[in-house]
Length: 113
Length: 114
Picture 1 (cartoon, each protein chain N blue to C red):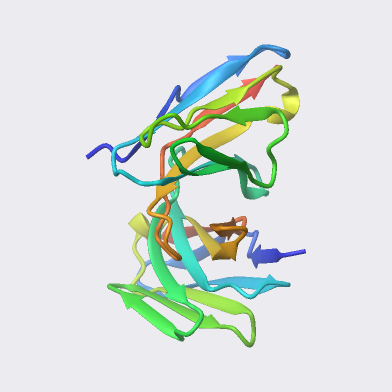
Picture 2 (picture 1 turned 90 degrees about the horizontal axis):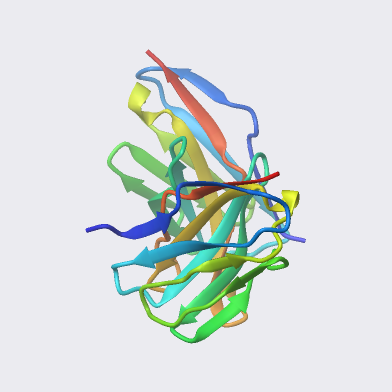
């Protein structure tokens, strides 16, 4: 049982480049999330989705885009990468009911130089 | 605005002792609180859930308390082991805008010394 799988694990981008962070889950969860984690700052929600075709902004959505064409996949797109987007990105999913545990992938470490 | 505070300094304890981690919050009335464990280079892993109407929850060597008057949760690991060394995150959750919003603290790093 793979759970939540994220690719790539590491990536270095130059300023202005674009990339897509991939996330897929095999637990048939309706809810999926993208977080970023910066040292001393905790996890911040970027975007979330409550089901295929439905996405919405979290706390820090600027500079990012998402899509949700299937239940399993929730890619995060970075357009025109900036140094402020250097971070560790985590994808998560859950069943969506109050209190249901979040299942996280192991993250993508992104550096923008 | 909502604020969640966890000890930013690492907590060092001797093996076999009880580790106690705190999570304080302000400007928030969460419906539930969760604790996660995070190892270096890995995503957080869910440990325990406690709801606003519950005072205490236990799971094996783990115990969580939730005091909505003090706006505080305590997370205890009894008979701690070096394998318990990790960063522990508290997260507060509740309904917000049609979805279950979960807000994370910054985490406390626990080091169990053999």
